[in-house]
Image (cartoon, rainbow, N blue to C red; front, side, top):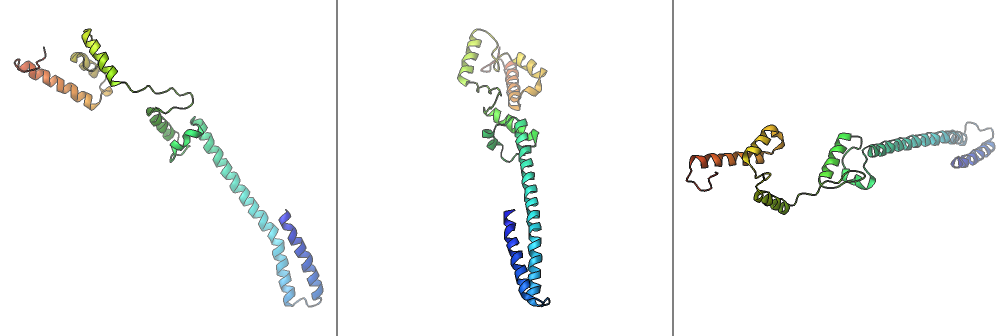
Length: 188
């Protein structure tokens, strides 16, 4: 409490001045000195109140910072990756999980998370399908229409609207070709 020491000196000066005033206890100097004395006595209390407020605010900030850090650790998100989660409340576990899944879908992984498989090479897929077709096997995606229809019937939610539309178009093309045996590209 070193900042309160100047007020001790002020109190000594006020006592000396009051001693000089003497019997004039009603004079202006006496009233001013009395007021200054009162202010000097109140000042340490105000300083202490301000200290307590600042201490409480700092403690609250530290508690909040610890809660945020704990939330990041529970979500297993290291500090270098956290800027990718800007705008998301660390206490919202569902939002953190959703953003983590979104980042993993882009191939960004951290910690012990398994790496996302690389996107399939379209050239490699085409070569494998041609090899399977030459060997007389069922080529996935372009294979036997009946097999694809059976797979779609077993799990319709696994196929996109575009995939369903392609199968419907292929079925319609085969129906038209069967109705007109002289059309080009008739399926046999």
